[in-house]
Length: 166
Image 1 (cartoon, helix red, strand yellow):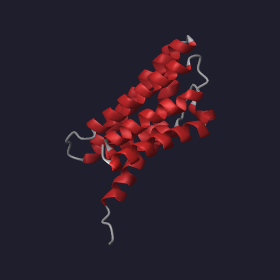
Image 2 (cartoon, one colour):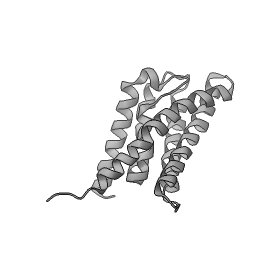
Image 3 (tube, helix red, strand yellow):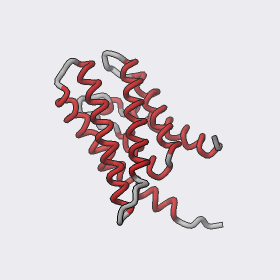
Image 4 (cartoon, helix red, strand yellow):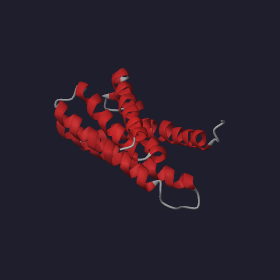
């Protein structure tokens, strides 16, 4: 692994974990507005290092989870981030008339992955109706991944495309 990729992965893992823990009050609710999930779509720009970083970050952050089973939260929360980041990255590489369409579809796939995986395992853990958790986690994911994360991708793309002065 290149040192740049290892550094990026470490930065994403640390950022994700710190954001979840620092904002625990909104990160572990029925409507989980995990601001850290805004990092998931950045896999569109940074690729595999971002996918791996948000996956590791979720494992670390979910150690402080108030759920009935921290182990389940660590395993399946990390899996959700792995699937969401990977889907966003790969779907964003599809060819459409506009690059932004593929990126938006990548974000939508990340929202769906987090909603379905996290919503389902939390419904099982808390022994409640799955649709309640899908609505709650889905609403939070739309905010963090769609409303915050998608524009973040557009900003990062512009920054990374600017020529560097020497």
